[in-house]
Length: 180
Image 1 (cartoon, rainbow, N blue to C red):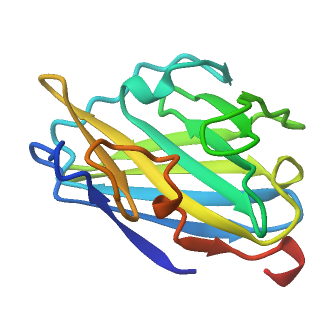
Image 2 (image 1 turned 120 degrees about the vertical axis):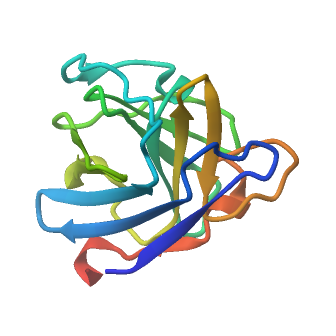
């Protein structure tokens, strides 16, 4: 599977984190598995364990996100995944329009492991809750470090302010499930 090197938004540089990579680690009939690796994570703020369940505002601290836009349309979905094990999923009819909760058949799984100089965040999304065709994909994250410093990581940034919903972020591809 391809590894994607994310870039911090230039207006919000990290303090210590030196790199973030994201990738799809597996895909079967039940799950889409993703991994983010954060280098130099010694000051990483990890939200406290809260147990599985939906929650809004996860992006206000360390949070990992996947955006999928089915080919040929403006509608897209967003998945927010927290090291606290909280999560949320939203559908949009167009760029930041028509937001509503996306129903999932079961809760995603989220785990974080922290080493001496890096952290790994793994997530598993139920495949039945994903779009069925090929999608443009954005892999992103918000990284909070001690002292309240936040950096915003994406495949690309096209605006003066961080905006993961910007179509410029959707530069990777997720093939249709039957093509995987």
